[in-house]
Length: 555
Image (cartoon, rainbow, N blue to C red; front, side, top):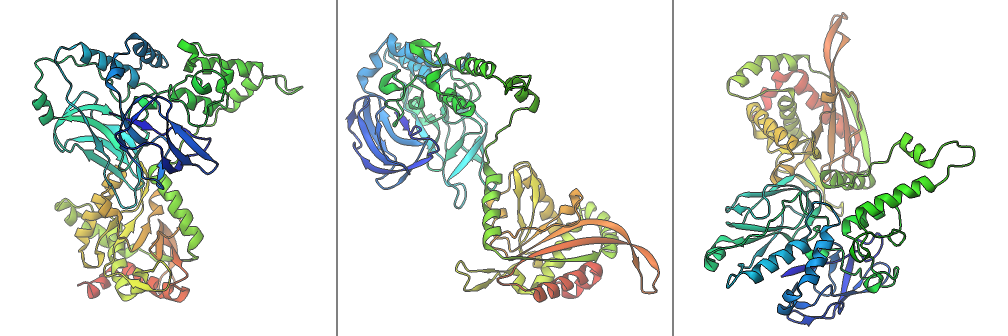
């Protein structure tokens, strides 16, 4: 069984609505038979079958949205299609020639079919797909970061198989049960959809039931060795499948489709050339990567420089350098969406002040060796968080949130202080739960745990959810002032500037050296006003400037 991957159906189109199925599960279909009608934002498109076979599964209902480059339906090749002989093997070998040294899915499947047909009485046990489960609230796709296994590997139940990056954190996907991996459906840096196949495997109990006396195992390339045609769940994503909306492109190939792999077509789009203009050197006129690069090189040489320029366009581009394009994915994409929405929908106002943390630093120096004796690293952050939790108890509106329609104020029962961490995956904001009830030692342990996890990109979803107020410590990087954007649905965030030794007047009017930290608050003006934020900040400031006063309000 293999999945039909919905191909490109128009420039810039990433999804479409499934209007009508022209087939049903169990139907036998012919190559190029219309199977579905989909509606894009431009037109109604008819999707043809890439090959003959029997339909085993329809992945979408009519009226649902289907994604380009995601499975549309599953098809099982007919029994007689396995005996097509040298012609199908030549075609698979031709696809593999697109990238020297890389094996395509079609070539692997053809070789496997040949080996199976040649083995007397042996039958490969059927594999099954591992469907990517829900990995976080509201998450519909993720990026494959690193495979921990290769095709052909034996895996155990709960063994880590792959690391994927969501828009919140790095998530480790484990094996549902023991077996042998037969297919990795994605390469690193490709996007995988939730509730779609991630990899295929043969469960170990099924292997035992088959109990073949001997097995000829075809070579299976690892995830970094797979050919460019293997970007989707099966070989049906290969270059020979006609694109649904290109039946009269150029006059070359079936329906005018120019034979080329998805990797070659992607390169064509990136370079801005027309595939129809490139002479193909592969079998049946297939356009190879080398053909595209040679065409682009000749095109650059042929373009004359403007009159009087004295040098070619190629030289100018080489001097200026090429623009490097990187897709916005994962945590950074989520941050872009959330911050854009917050800035556009929340009326921010700012409030700044200075805090004399001389006494707080002295207290930390006294407590530091005691904490280290128990294996806890004490920084200023746990002390600042504890003071914040106590101040929030006195001013609970700083720990509230507005209802979706902004008609109600919801006061949160606990103060969960978020801290922005500059991780390798982007900005993450895990939070320490129930700060008002924790000891400073407990807060320090949580800060250390969350910081380490965030920098590795492996924060648990529970640690990223439920925050009620946030701290952005720009001071550790050298900043003094900032205007932070509120992390919704919270109503306030504070940026801590760096601690500086500055001259100040004491009670006797003498100039003394004091440790000064600047702070900048951003508040949601729909629920907070300047007076409320100022009084709250003064209470917090009192705790930090005279830290012994926190003892009076600790529970």
